[in-house]
Image (cartoon, rainbow, N blue to C red; front, side):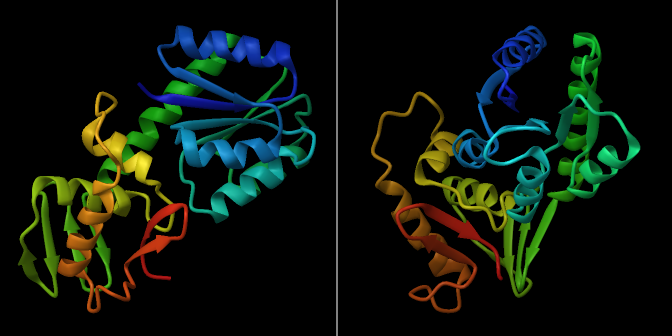
Length: 228
């Protein structure tokens, strides 16, 4: 189920958007302020983010800027009581995909959510068909990995892990996220097996597996794929 993240300090607005989102068939998570959004995005991995412009601690414009700088590519919709062209220009310059002025129709919000998710899904599918990182190529459609043009044998689980990390290029992915993605919600095993898979992947794609350049470990956090 796709997940929508809302950041708004007004309880009544969070209640309204929750109803719209859940009646639309999506999962819902909310934040009370801008700084909380930055934490939730890592753990919740939302498919679309709705940001109120005026929030305590950090406004929506700064949140949007930081999310885009961190490599978050999902659609972002701003909610604001101000609808002037200057305010909208600031929002779009920050990296937003849409701008909705309060008060708004719940039906219109839902239509915009659906439209942006459909568009993002189409773009994502075409964009990740083939991922290149240096001499490494990951063919998502054929489930094939090539290094310097030569096919590298990967087990299904190894490929799933590498593909998921590559889709989130230069984003930190935790062991818990990898476990959920590869084994699913019903998996009750230990996440300690993840480092074993990571080591095997590095042995296949890194020039020096002991000093990885493409698939790095972020201490006490998780892993990150991609050359700086």
